[in-house]
Length: 248
Image (tube, rainbow, N blue to C red; front, side):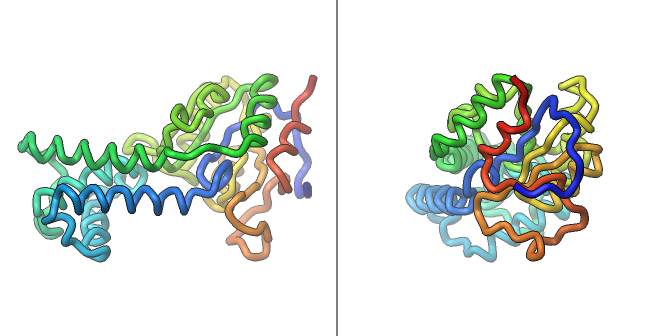
């Protein structure tokens, strides 16, 4: 553990999820493979789309509504609707399909991906740490992703889980940090945000008035290799060190 700033009494914590509690990239890759296998088996027209085609549909959707960049679920639904209906990028629109078969297919593919996306287990020490900390102070999850916290067995530790969406701009925007502080009815200077991303988590939380703990489970932690604008309050060697900030 290395301190860069003085720490106020920690009365609550907020947590990033992806790449903080678990390595997210292989999970997403596995979910993408599951989705593509499902599409190949059931929707041959969409299966012929290349990686570049999928990316172009995604890019076009965000051009039509920039808020979709914060809502991975809704963005995926828009892209799936276009792909399954054979809509080219230049004709893509954001209105819901009027074809019940397309809508059913979108739901089917969407559920395939998100079931696979949350099909993993956390290490026992992560559960133990969250359990111990949550027994003393309130915790809220703040994530730009949309993992199913109930399916991976961590919802019981959090009072709430805030996901970026059309209504909640993704971190480092202050919206979810401000919402969490309001829910906790607490001054941000007594909340410790724990996250891996130097910009989205550390910079975003600091700008919202939070204290910050930097921890990344998916890569070596070297601040000189990160795009650091501001230093965190503390750099952790292990998430278990969070128990040092609770009393009693």
